[in-house]
Image (cartoon, rainbow, N blue to C red):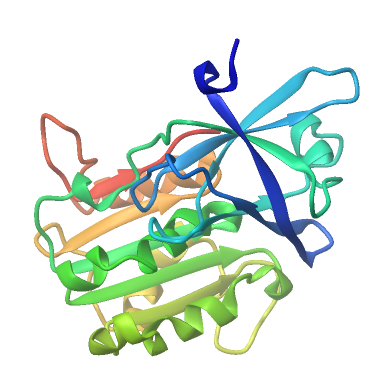
Length: 258
């Protein structure tokens, strides 16, 4: 099979940045033909010593118009894929499927005033891509980025988040974004404490945001571990915020690629 006929391209690892002992970011070259919408994911492949390839899905952190691709990963102890991935170094090869996947994109919503982005752990990745694109800033009056981690040191990409509204192309939207960190296992200055679901149920999240979650105005995207997604969906459903489907537009969008 020729390279052009393969379903993947071979890309070069440009940079690996450890963020904590168990979290790291990757930057790789981007094939000129690779297209994606902010919020989508790619299938990454790493070759093992025996020549076999292990594939996993990773959301792009980078924006659709960047010349490179950024990804955010956790090291799973004994995990077949992340153990191989975490050993890669600058100059190594990473396989990337030619096609982007996923529906964690803003076209899931037909209207809305307030955009809520609820993430745990590496689930913040697609939201960083969305926030580096124009669409969210143009469409919504306010954006609430809620990022939940166990320990404060796991709050990644703080410099990126803090610098978004200083970027030239987003400067006119300054004041729309509010970042709400959540730390579940320790007290941290400026952060809420508790699970996202509990913070919604007790009203603390809305008080911190200065904004109510409502079917009329709120559009909510959720990304993180499957249990968090399921639990948060149920809490929002009790507020009459429904999953957005192609046949029935709603107020909630999730991504399940675990």
